[in-house]
Image (cartoon, rainbow, N blue to C red; front, side, top):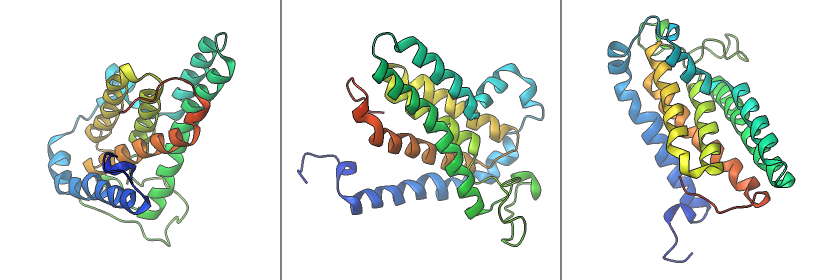
Length: 214
């Protein structure tokens, strides 16, 4: 590897170390702040507010199916193959984020904050082993939102901070509703970003245009 290459562009071992470090920073360290956010960030009727419902729907995967269809219809007349590839990327990425989130919930098995009033509660493997209902780590809404935001940041890089702000807002509403711990949201954000980038590396050659950096 050339000395001028960024660290993330190194070999498998180097990338693995980066990933482990990110998981520790975004998954483990935020647990130190979970109690603070649970005690101080709460809005009983948060989803009665229009802006909160708007942000929550950023983490609803079918939202991005509509966006992908609209983008395909708009771009198809100019470059049909490119439009199809870009639409598929935006369609698949949020659903992949949601699927990974559900698998992680089954493995980590931490329950929602309100089960023990802000203390951690882990579900036994013998209890509903294949159901994610009531499990929280990571936040699937946040993971879907950040997967979609990362895809949109690749497709429309000049507006990338708009997409990331909407995704972050989705995570904030999940904490305000006491549906998730702070660490549920931060791990979901990291993994959603990772899913978005991972799929981008797989499909980017099918899409024309310069590559943007988030």
